[in-house]
Length: 348
Image (cartoon, rainbow, N blue to C red; front, side, top):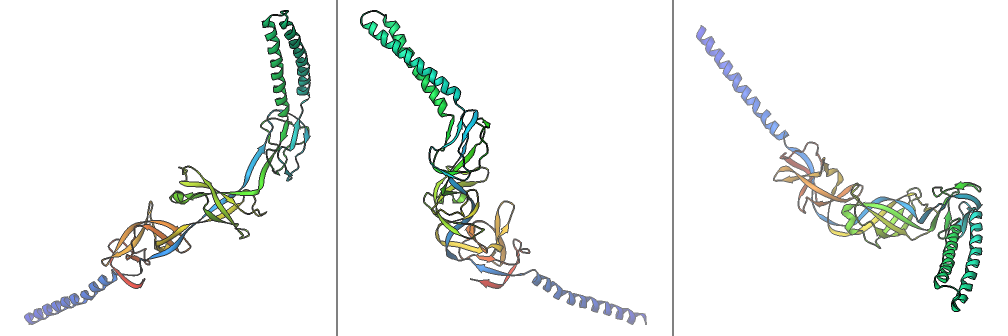
């Protein structure tokens, strides 16, 4: 009776092993299918775009100057009216010059005496009554006094502080009777009839910035737009920021254009008929570069790209992609180099 029982036990064991092998086969097939990623894609095509960049800028006065005295002294006359428009050479302030005026009068008297002495010696020289050397010394004395008079008049002119050009005065920082020095700021003056604009662009656009290039200026708080043209650009790119500083001239005169205020600058650099534009969310940022996932022979391949201009949803690819490439646009968190890819949707 033991042999039939042994054979029966072996038969049951073999049957159970074969059943386990049959059950494991579908599991293996299922794991292989699960390794294929279902994604969406886009076939790269070229399109025509206007190369437009937007940067921030600052409104500047056409000219702006800090008014300071050239010499130290006490203010005896003050004509600074805050916010007033003044003409070129208008007297803004006057320093005490009583001592200089007295010195000037003394020199004028000395000049009269020296001139009479020179005149008498010239007559004596004609009849041999004086040596040539004595006469020459009298002539030099006259010239020396004239030079002192000119120097004193220049010092007196420095006591008068005048407007360097037609402009609008700022706030007054001193009062009459105050003692001031060359470091004292009296007020400011600026030309506000015409405004300038200063902004910076990335160095990759530096070759496209030229004098006369049109641009648009928009004030964020009002949404109003103004027209401007590039006036000049810096001769080199800033090494710290890798940006190029640019100045433009705003054509309109508007009270909204307050010097120092923030604005948006929109530059139209030209038209590109062979631009490659891809969705911004398809770009994978790296520490030092940018990548995209591309479909190649059934697998994912990571390609490094260089980007250009962008808008709210699209970005230009300058290098790294060519027309006809198939870009993977979804599932980028799970896509690795060599991953098996299956497209559920493919846009042209």
